[in-house]
Image (cartoon, rainbow, N blue to C red):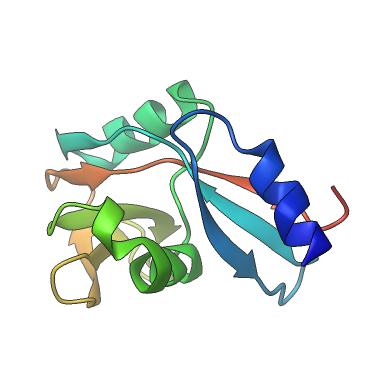
Amino acid sequence: MGEYMQIRGMLQDGEEYAGLILGKDEPDYHLVLLPGDSSDVSWPTAVDWANGHGGALPTRRELALLFANLRESFERNWYWSSEPHATRAQLVWGQNFASGIQTIYGRPYRGHARAIRRISTAA
């Protein structure tokens, strides 16, 4: 509980704590949703938007945690991830925040974007 309170104290205005991501090939970390939303953007534009807001697009795993813990902080729309499809590089994964389904779309598709930041568990 102490680490959770420490992380909560590190949040900046408008940020929301989403939870802990258990590392697979990397250490565990805490996920923070940054304020703001971008709509009607292609994937390259979404990447640039997230970077410009001091964060990154979430991974598929991070989107699943955001859907589970902070669904009410999202519009009931489709959001880009940071992950291109493994074998079809022109496609990128995303999360539907109405249904919970993850699927792939072409990079020119116009979707929504949210930015996240990661805090090491050793913070």
